Image 1 (tube, rainbow, N blue to C red):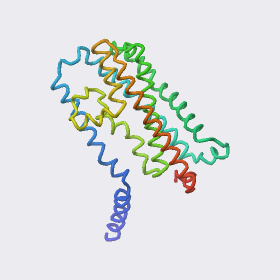
Image 2 (cartoon, rainbow, N blue to C red):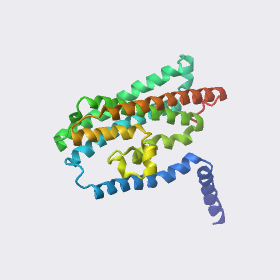
Image 3 (tube, one colour):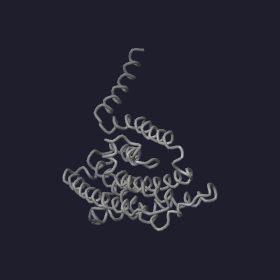
Image 4 (cartoon, helix red, strand yellow):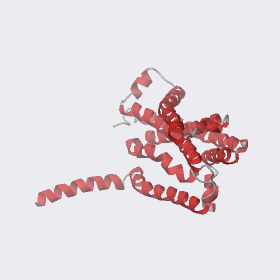
Amino acid sequence: MKNSLNRMYGLYLRHFFLIRNSFPRVMDLIYWPTIQITLWGFISKFFSMYSDYYNNTVGVILTCAILYDFLFRSSISFNMLFLEEIYSRNFTNLFIAPMKISEIITSLILTAFLRTMIGLVPAIILTTPLFGISILNLGIPLFFLFLSLYIFGMTLGLFVSSGLLRFGPAFENIAWSTMFLLAPLGCIYYPIEILPDILQTVAKSLPLVHIFEEARHILVEGTVDYKNILNAFYLNFIYFFLGVLLFYYSFNQARKKGSLINVGE
């Protein structure tokens, strides 16, 4: 009996120390309930205060949900492709090819777009017969909204991939949770005015706020405010540039340390 308890205690300690010594694992345990409560808290607050804000509530929310899913799928697709290279130990083959870092990034971006569209197109098609709603009602600005969302998705992919190169598999949970972490500040389903003042300042630095504000503005007001679109692109290019720099730095550091080939272990 005592030996059995010791073995169980030993296994418990193993996982306890894995969690205690890994910041990504600790964050994974904390953010899920925090983000869910925060997100739906803001949504509930919005509808309790502005119950007559939308004339077409289902259409606005569903359109924003499709846009958000496009962002989510694009970012996750980039991360999954990079993780595939890690776990298949394919970096050695890439070095032998040889491939430049810019070529790796470009290839992942193009392939991620294909994966994203395969998942998104059926969802867009189904919204019309099921709910009588079409995201195409956004008109020409829809192209710019999608493009801006895709750039931001690729930017998040670059930041997460840099973390994977730096911290290894322990950072993988962040790869699946980045979008959920940003969702409350992205103001996907509610205006930015719902956020506390201090969070509004932070939210305005994200392209998401300007993209979804513009989507709602078009659907509710019937007009286009290109200022939101331009602000989103401006912020996107800044973050994308920083993401590329960080990826280059992390990639080169991992290669110098010899950890790049073994990062999947």
